[in-house]
Image 1 (spheres, each protein chain N blue to C red):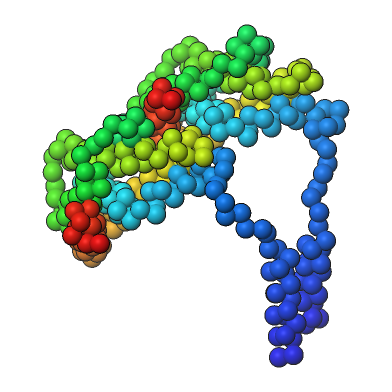
Image 2: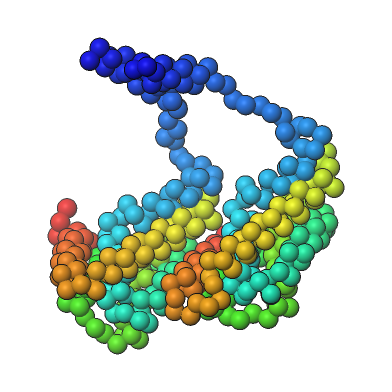
Length: 201
Length: 204
């Protein structure tokens, strides 16, 4: 027992010795761009749930969607990103991103089995809106290339996360869990939709 | 014996509080410009993304095609470096973005690129990046040492990336195996970055 105080003291000393000055200013350079790019899709809950839902839906649809989606989605999203960079306005971007979460959530919850071209078209339209939102931030980033690398990587990893969750469809219980998750995503999407339309402050 | 961890922690804490920045003056040493040439591209994201993309593309096409890049890529870097005074301070951003888009699309499509085209792409990347690295050299830099460092790191990065990709994506894998898809998805990411960067350069 007598050793507890020295240990606590030691821990305190080590903590102080290891302390680094916090640099909370505007992040600069490659690291700043990379961090802001990585965090942009993750910190926006509406983006996050929609991207995960794309992965889950792709896994539910099975081949070829499960492997075509991760390859083509970033490229289609980049087209939206280009529109964002060029400041080409899209109609009601926030509302459309919320709608994407609702529709993708419902698709997952209902195990909607659209033919692949139709599913790809739905996802592509939403990808352009999501890419537009990210791309609009690109010229303001500390390092545009680093920001681009960050947000494409984050989006890809969110997809991968969704596909990994979607692997639960192999088991009947997992399928139910995923449908519940889809309903949850649709519910959160509804909240953002209401917010986008001004119904919720 | 019971006090030992505490003593170790105390010692570590004292050592940490007494540390100061290591200042080994590598850059100022006689071979400093060699290390500058070797480290300069690794600190630039354009180089990192494009070199890795080139290595991955070569790796996906197999060792028999990819091994041509082992001499082609460093030679391209040296050619680019020697052309740097001609290019001057012309920005290579659009060329970089175009190469990212092209290599990314080829990877995403799992295109079977002929060896000659692969060598041409790698040579173009190397020349562009060699020139970009050379454009930032000061008059006091030893160009020979810088070139040697650049060529060595170019050789190392491309060869290692290629070898890792060959090992990762085994030739026996089908086109829908997760390894093949992972490499193609990486291509999609690189292509997407290239497309957005190209638009950014054209817009600004």
